[in-house]
Image (cartoon, rainbow, N blue to C red):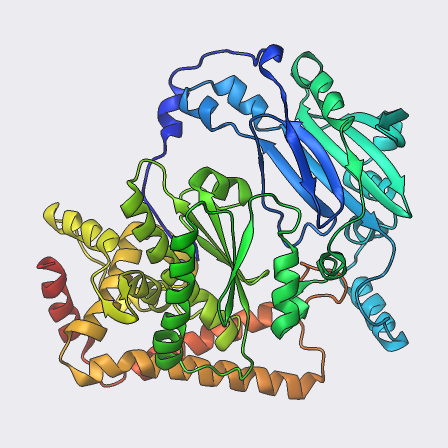
Length: 539
Ligand SMILES: [Zn+2]
């Protein structure tokens, strides 16, 4: 469900000039002190390092910084850029004080143990997911680290702890470890193994010596942050989402009725506007066009990073301009596109938001099932072309797809027959995706805004109703047959692991195929294809 773009980045060009360069040690400096009041710690990081957003699944991380390598990349300093991309600082906090609410019942514990057995969760994996101590986490993350490391006493001001150093993969790890009031803290630097001692280690040690602990100002953050937002609802979920940015300087939250925007955008006015507009679009468009099957009022996270490079660092797939993560329920965007004017950047960001927010809406309103891609991506792009001004919504042709189709037609290339397009499963949609996304957009726009054929226009609602009804019926039936063990659910207490159910996937494919049969029954597809092509050729 990534938003497809066909832009080439600077990167290809930069590879052509391989200049060898090493960061001169004298250029490195300590940055001003960072005080993370919510968590109660402080550290002076290094100059030119940026605070990075913490992902919801990084449960023990309360601070994350990375060296900003944008300039090295721009200047084509390939080796420097590669080495620099290893430079990383994470602050970990491991508390054995249980703050996850009421204790688990015996039955819950039994069920959890059974599921773990079924999933073959090894003791090693268990240590990684729910470590009892920092040492346990370290040994689970890096096998034999205890046989490689050097540990010695370390002091940061009045704090007494240990310095742990070892190598793993291509990284050198330099960790200051402290235990304070029953809580374990680790300030963990990484560098490329070839440039650690020559360039970074001395500065890492200077920075680690500035680590300090003080009384946290916000006990709510600490209580909420260990909770998995996906298991919470309503205001409690909202608070847990907000607590996830507490350790990251420059980040703030904006509330809308059904959304929490988490962002470090420097353009706050723009963020406030799009948060407002998304709420309007949800209410006036998504809910009206696709009535929810789920009565619950969801609260959904929307993460907006300031720049394109921060978006990739956060995990945005290359070549994408936004994505929806069904696992965390999070929609991820950025505001500043590289080599794009500020006005266009903002317009792109809005387009991507309306596209991805549609996927997010369907996921919660109907369930985690994806309709055919022509329907799913086609509607995403249909909404991407929307403008919202003063609460008034207008549907305009989405220029990314229009431009693609115009040049396609100019070059006298073939279009995909509707008969084929309507049947393409997701994996086939991603091959030669540019054409498929563009034709998918065109089909939805044509049927919703252009065609005068009432039966053809009704096919879209017919398709959606069939999918929603039958997925729901299939789920209900399955539940009845199997009791509460529905498969596919995540393991309680262990985030991020799901049991893939291939039987479900096969059944869903069948339902989607029948949906096309039903929705286009009685419609002359060849005639529709002819009219549709004629319209595309005139775009
Ligand atoms: Zn999409």
